[in-house]
Length: 128
Image (tube, rainbow, N blue to C red; front, side, top):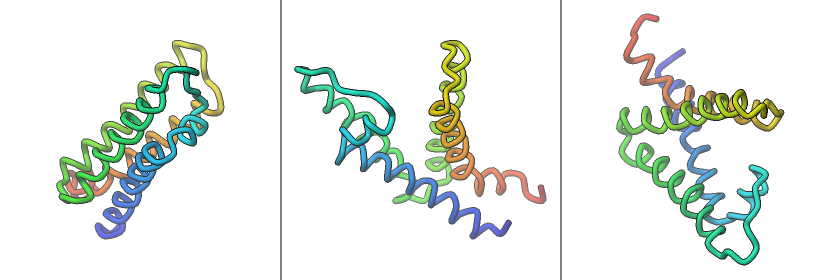
């Protein structure tokens, strides 16, 4: 696959990551609904936690590679996505939670990480 196509896929997957971050920041209740969690009534910081973690962390780590174009920044985001998939897989096995949601999430997490990393992995192994 041409390098430009790989780079485009990487940027698109990073924009997907950024979109999830902005969604968590702007619509924290929507983010909770998406992942099947809920706030604790009476604890206002429940929403703050969603905005900070799902919003702030995802937005920050996704913006950095998009702004700088640094390969290591893209690889760091990719590793985060792939580790999320690995940890979810371990949890699904350990906790007997091999649900459709978890299987879909594992595929999305590994897929997003792979798409982000692809052009940089291809550059590291030319001719493969």
